[in-house]
Image (cartoon, rainbow, N blue to C red):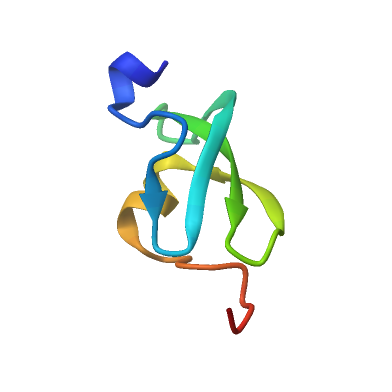
Length: 65
């Protein structure tokens, strides 16, 4: 999956660091979105889509780190 998205473990988006690929899910429009397990600098872990990470919609988990 990393080869298709250009997103590899260790890549940073704001305060998020990509840990691993989690799954892919299709939207109602038929677009397939890869989802990744990411970790915030404060230690919080979450699964986010590549689209959300690239857009900058969520630069962190909401922490003040």
